[in-house]
Length: 246
Figure 1: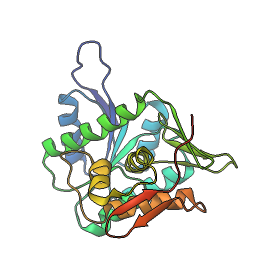
Figure 2 (figure 1 turned 30 degrees about the vertical axis):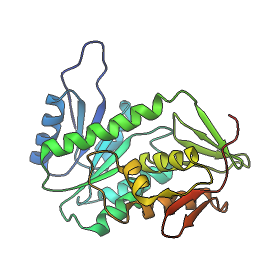
Figure 3 (figure 1 turned 90 degrees about the vertical axis):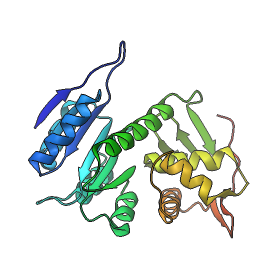
Figure 4 (figure 1 turned 120 degrees about the vertical axis):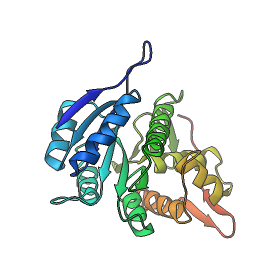
């Protein structure tokens, strides 16, 4: 396990990233490139080293390789998300995979990843994805109204935590959060799939047809049994409830 600090802008604190990959050479290459571009970077070869990093540092983003011996990236993501070990407002996640097919992409998104990139990848593209996810994370933290209420639910715009008045609660991924806010911003109006894809993935990030369907499906499961996101045929999706005063 290693850490390296990148160049800082005046008065700014660097975002903290952890790179998890069993390939030591690739792990060092990615970590070094990100550190050279102004990020604080830690590296881990497996889930045990990752947990040690998370226990000792406030990590903003984790880059997880899918194909690793022992516990693979998807299993790590599923376990940590479900167990809540990353806590409220935990790190965003970018998945890496040498396979690079839609099955892996969809699986990663369903388990809570914020983005996905096939290996081998251009380090500059990975850096662009990292910066895009971190910008969206920072924008969510800086929103002026901290809470949104609808149908008994309260959405914390800082932590991305959903809580119902009956005690149900769920942590949203970056994509889920952005899509839900987009639907709440246009209540009882159809929002096109293309609009939601742009919202969920961000500018300059590759998108694919099923990404929004996966995100909507995850949101519906987290909001269940409330049926408040409806499909508008040939148009997109709609939030059936209007937001309430915060």
